[in-house]
Amino acid sequence: MSYEMIAILMFLSMMVMLLTGKRVFGAIGAVAVIAALLLYGDGGGDFGFNATMKLLKWYPLLTLPLFIFMGFMLSESGIADDLYNMFHVWMGPLNGGLAIGTILLMVLISAMNGLSVAGMAIGATIAMPELLRRGYDKIMVTGVIQAGSSLGILVPPSVVLVLYGMIARQPVGKLWLAGAIPGLMMAALFIIYIVIRCRINPELGPAISQEELKKYSLKDKLKLLQAGIIPLFIFFSMTGLFLMGITSLVESSAVGAVAATLAAFFKGRLTKKVIEETTRKSLGVSCMFMWIILAALTFGAVFDGVGAVKAIEGFFIGELGLGPWEILILMQLSFIIMGTFLDDTAMLIIIAPLYIPLVKMLGFDLIWYGVLYTITCQIAYMTPPFGYNLFLMRAMAPPEVSIVDIYRSVIPFVAIMVLSLAIIMLFPQIALWLPNMFYAY
Image (cartoon, rainbow, N blue to C red; front, side, top):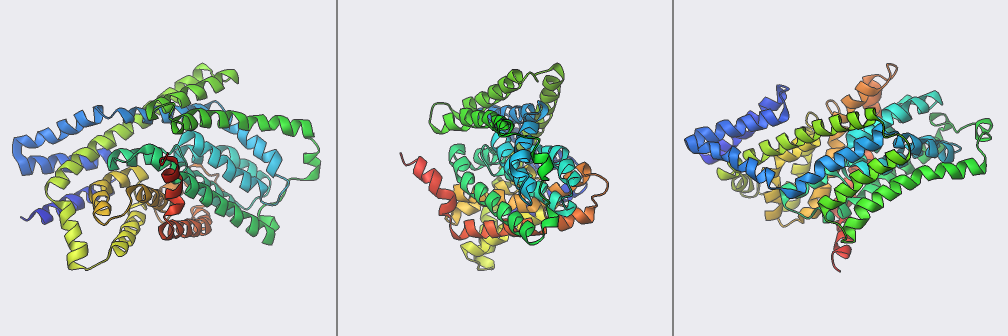
């Protein structure tokens, strides 16, 4: 059997295993171990051992549990609730103002967390009941929360970009800076859409009544702005110190975790329950990431050992005669298809052995490609019928929001994401300008 056929069988076996609903790390790891033993005999057992040693020696991996801990601490301690209350009062007088405030809230949560799941949970539990109670259109509400939460994997400190940086061997600092402007651009496009849509049809996002606004004096409004000071302090203490070269990446994540804990303490919310819930959830998510990365490293070593990357390159360029941009577009389309039934981490694990070396061979910048990959993950998260975010929203939404409503709600926001992806592909400097400028000095 040719090496190309072995690579194809490995990939297909992994996809079949994933479709059975098995754990991602189990599906990927099982295929990798079985293939290694069949190909190399007893020596195949070294693949898993070497992957374990490589994982344990990855010092930057310490950032993952620390970033995750920080996000859950902010969520469990209710600091996100304070942020939404601030946006509620300041943005409420506008038609669609609370929806705009929700997008801004998601941007801030993303800047403190780096995960889309946390933004989705906060949006569904805090923002959604308030928006529905105030007469906002349920389809717009679900779309806003899903789109806003997806920014968590693009706006720094994105955990997905940390994982991408580890696997692609690219500087995480550059990846964070590369994701900043595209993330803010996408948030701005979401807000522009909400403003235009609610101006055309004000009933979709009614403004807060004047009677309610009178309850808040100017002094009260200014006091509410204090809710934004803590997130800015945490963001600067973490990302700012890292970019200034004062702290390393791992030290930066530790600073963020400590800052979030201190914020909860000074707010009087560092209770035993908050500590227990934060620790339990952080441990669960961190272990999940480590098992997936371990399985990915093993699979990648076996997959690359049979010459899969060279075979794919020869197939695209030699047999199909495709150019670099055509291959890149096909890769992005494959992300969207895989994203209908996989999360972003699983997709990265699957495509890393295949696409990252191929992208490098085609002459594209791997920092820029990391941003393209992340935006495509956002699109895949929200693409029916099996987008990851769609089912998260269905699980968290009230009964009056049907799955059809959720599918309909994402259409305009997915269109905006596709537009953003096209803009970044056509104008790479939108993503590369900031990291190139910063690291030039």
